[in-house]
Image (cartoon, rainbow, N blue to C red; front, side):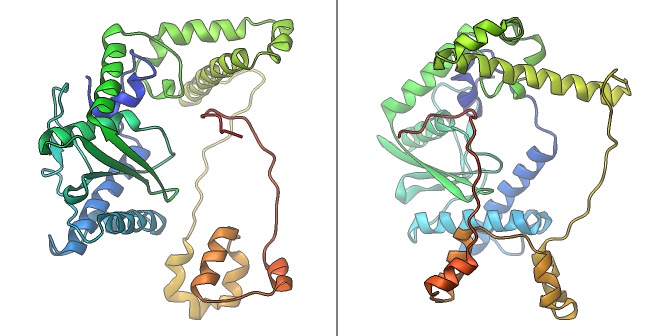
Length: 331
């Protein structure tokens, strides 16, 4: 079905069909969204009581939700934030079903959308929400801010009606044509196993001879195509291994490791017991924090370091760069 959340995928492939999310990532995202809505309403005094969703989150996930709520309050500049799910549901031209946003700040002509997990390009989906809001309020411009709770990062969009219509029409044309093209979202598509584009591209990659691969190094565009094809091949390999493991199939030349359970404790959860444990015993067990976080803590505590103290405190490590999918950065 053609819906706002599918636009980012349909802009890349007209045959995309989402797989119903019932696993842990989807459940976690739904819970964090609910907690965000609850806290917005509780802190504004729109509702009483506590947030059951927030109580179920891990300390780390709570931190991400609190960050998003604080960002939302800052963006609102004292204006009301609408977070009630029914009030955030609007009709959007070109869509059979209405779309539901996470929060709206009407006085700022702004929509807020919270995301868990990795950062992706959600411009098409946000354009649909913006068009619905402009249509509902008779405006010609609308802003959308996507808040990534895990990375504590944000993406800002500013749309006109024309921009929204252009993006939505492009997705509609792809959807109607059913044009298939491999992309970063293939592994989430319900039609992955039966997709002709997947079959054609993987076959092409696996049949590439060594001399062609050597010559390919001189052609960045050809390398890009080949790497995307190989990414799909690796996804197929991953699925084959998972099926063999689930069915207990032994693969000659390969060994299977057993599932293992690990138990961890968040440092924040140990706060009530610090006096009994002893801070000197706890600190050596904690992982290093980033230089950015250390700078923030020292600044808030108004600590000024000498150059010698700074060199002793901050350890520099270097990580080799890599090539991965994404938009090329301008040099």
